[in-house]
Picture 1 (cartoon, rainbow, N blue to C red):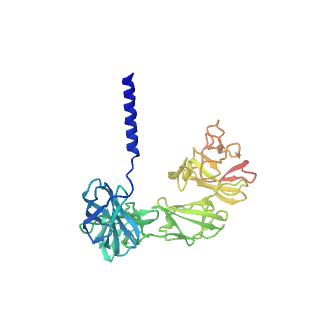
Picture 2 (picture 1 turned 60 degrees about the vertical axis):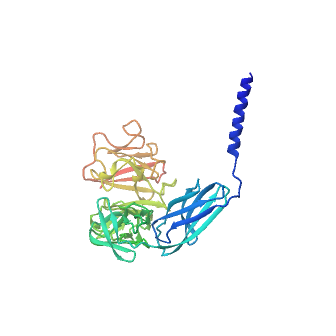
Picture 3 (picture 1 turned 135 degrees about the horizontal axis):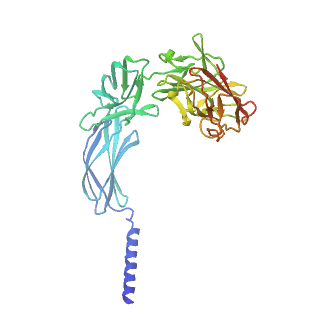
Length: 442
């Protein structure tokens, strides 16, 4: 029994000792940290890795950390921290950031040595900073590197036979013994340093033109701008540009700077051609027009403010198609069950909505399986209880006839006539739960 008691006492004593050790804190104050800067440059380039060499000591109090901080105009822009367990010499490096629009000038290096009592020794040095004068910079594409020559202070360019679109990031070489490669890439619609995301340079046509970049202002060219009715189209990605604008029925639509427009597919539901002019062919309202330069067609979508429109309880708004067997400008771009690709029907007034298709081109002639929705996404939908048709060509699924409730199908043993144009009109004037689908051969 005595042995057990002695053993328990030993365990409790050890636990108390550990607890006391964990609770021990160095007292604040005390000590006299000493900092001696033995080596540090007084001149550097933006983008350099700045070397330093210091000696640290105290009067017997343990040291904690050495911080080296860089200040531009009173703002700390870079810092490195070294754990100083022992007195002695320490070497390190501090990165000097490369920012746009920052001219040559004097920065401050701040050395802060701190001991465990939070007592500090501080030394400050001025640092003369200049922007590196790169002898050249490189335009780095996926397949090649194109050299851009210096054409002026901070200005670089290359002129040559180039494709219409050049996707590349820019890399500047290291300058001097402490320099680093600096990269410039694309981020949220602008050029930033430190990125390798490709910059979407573009020109009106392929051929001989110039790509330029300024390493001070980050101004670059060319970025081809496109407009519709005077509204500049914003870039969504390398091949898609969009603009939101209010259009009225029969209003002329004019696109600016889009090459080979005569080769583009024009959606007849929203735009009709009349004597060489393009006229708006749907109900007046706000729309988003997206130019797809890859497939060469315009996506037109009804809008409500900054969001795609939804079908209102009163039958106004928009109706969308999601599913298989239909796609614009061709079946090669089938919608499928991808909500982001949902097709907007054209509102034509009277709470009616239209989609025009060509069998074998924009709709399958023998097998379709798509549905009408209240929005560009999942949610409200037209099931067979809310949708009817008298068509002898297309039927509405009920879950038992080969299609899910509301999904459309081509009647068994029938098919759409290849090359023929069909107009599908959805009428919700009697209520959105009493929609009627009509199919007309044009």
